[in-house]
Image (cartoon, rainbow, N blue to C red; front, side, top):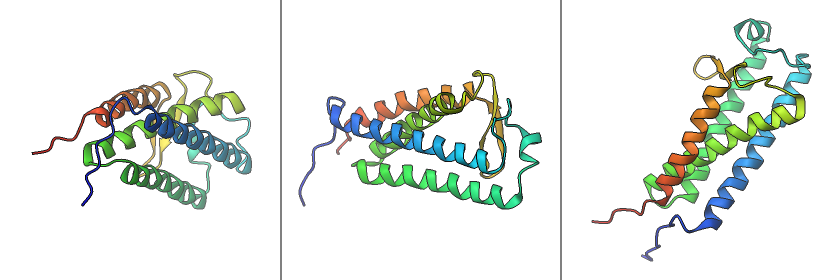
Length: 161
């Protein structure tokens, strides 16, 4: 069986390719959310996306949104599976691309619809398994850490032995 050398921190094409995916995916996700908000009539977007706003949404839409969220995680996990060569690198790919995706998602929403108003704006981060309502600064901060830790996990060579 052919032995592949591990990707190293100096393999900038690997990082740039993953970053390009994360940027495109984050922007695409924001575009979809803008369309969803238009369809359900919450444009302009409420200041806070909190339980009071969510309570007004039809159950069928929540169910569809949950499938979109699940598909997002599956796509990021699939990318990690095919791009990484060993478990730690796969975890790194997942964290790195997830972090970039999430940061770009909020940046794209800010550019397109001027939302969120600030990093303290409340958002419904996920609906799986139950709704998570937190200020935007928390997922953005966690995503920055995911980018850093993901890059670190990808750069550590596989221990053979």
